[in-house]
Length: 290
Image (cartoon, rainbow, N blue to C red):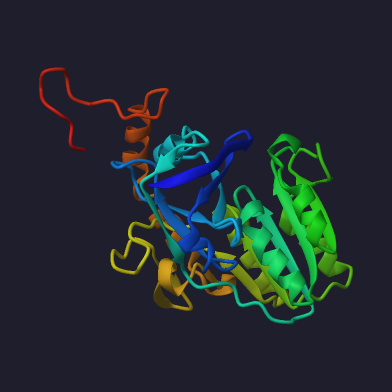
């Protein structure tokens, strides 16, 4: 069992989860992810690593409460335990001197970009962070990025914080102003990453994205995270999670992400306030094994 050092809501629907897992903390690198379960009957959930402390033996993730599995995860309490915590998984980010690095993050991506930004700053690169949210009260970790980045820009759709617009609007403005980044990252929702990919095609940018595909085992055995990059089939868990954003088949990726939506909605309707699954069978008909 793995101790929950902290589970706390950062902003509405976004939570920070820190787990004591020395075997992961000792080896994890920026860009990698973990897979965990909230309980013995829980679904396996892949989460990007947002921070780690090798001395304390802890690993931190930021997750969005979006489906049934993450709703259950959001009901865990600090001081409790979880039965499964596997990692580090995936390939680490390739960090090397490349001049200026622009990191665009929205949703859980704000957290996932943090260790990548820190690593690029340590490598001597100029780091520009562009943090995106729909509104001011969905922003988090701005101070953390400000502590390590050379420049931080905040974008909100409603203009309640920073500038009105999206992260790729700001990147477009910076490019028009003469910025020539050696590398651009985009991590967050599929819309953010696919939009950044279109811009990268137009401006010939070196773009990295972290694909948030459907995963089960995380080791390339199940094939659930299959995607297409550069016209070739790839597994996001072992070939990624980072890919050249210009090479990704975004239409195919979004179609695969929608494949289990009916089952997901059905499961969410069965969750009670504690995060437990209620039986879908009438009383007296035996246990539910769905």
